Amino acid sequence: MGEGGKEGVERRKIQTFEDLIVWQRGIELVKQVYVLTDDGKISRDFGLRDQLRRAAVSVPTNIAEGFERASRGEYIQFLNVAKGSAGEVRSLLRVALEVGYLDPPKHDQLRAAALELSRYLSNHIRSLKQVTR
Image: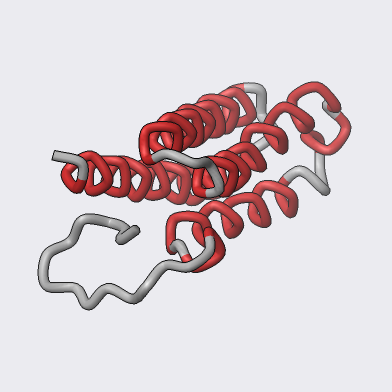
């Protein structure tokens, strides 16, 4: 299964979900969220902290679970769930900004990472749908 849907880019054989750039980007977002939520006021707001962590972890986890499923349709379904979780991360980051747990530059950096991940997921979903036509 290729990924990204970009023309002219050399594609390497994807053998495991760990080979997927979109999964690797998801892991990077998880690491950033864990570092963010390990310190400051947000670390003491257990509800927001835990929900933000769960949403972030859900992205690469759903990519992995979908990749391991038997059908392309199931894979696409799990990629859509992952994309929804990336949106949830963005929403929770905004909550953290609004209640004063995040400064604007940090919010903007993490929001951009989550938005980029959503775009990678959209491109991957689109490329998988094109293969089935």
